[in-house]
Length: 130
Ligand code: SF4
Ligand code: SF4
Image (cartoon, rainbow, N blue to C red; front, side):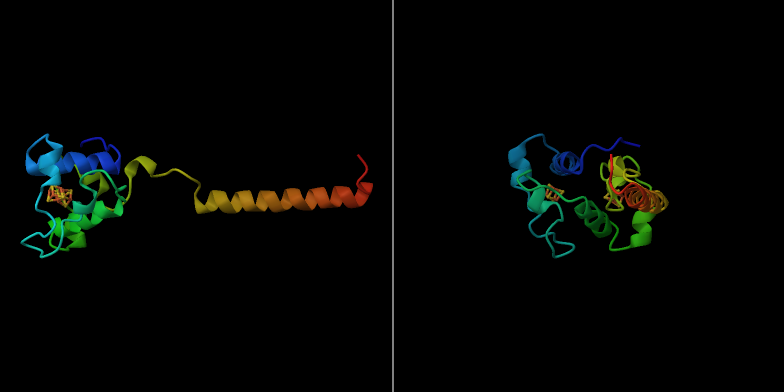
């Protein structure tokens, strides 16, 4: 599998692949403003020149269009060397598993409350003396 770059750089790389050219002008002049098959703009169209930051959700939409709207088909896509493949669920795999889980958050919350109670008790006992 291709290691994911950022969604924005992946999208631009895909557009160059799509027009089969390294030329930014070719990408700019793409006719994806209205796709014949879907009668809609290509989901990447607004982001193709890099002027707007592409949300990763647009990758999901692109994959759904690619698979005719079938969520299951996107899940089971077997084109693992497609540049969009790592982003097909609308999530950035580079950011996955960052942050804390629900269990960790509730443990932290309990610890914070226990510490606050302990401090209040100490203040009550000592009358806030150092
Ligand atoms: S915007 Fe869509 S149609 Fe145009 S170059 Fe990019 S992927 Fe291809
Ligand atoms: S990852 Fe699969 S569903 Fe998504 S654009 Fe590529 S081939 Fe289509």
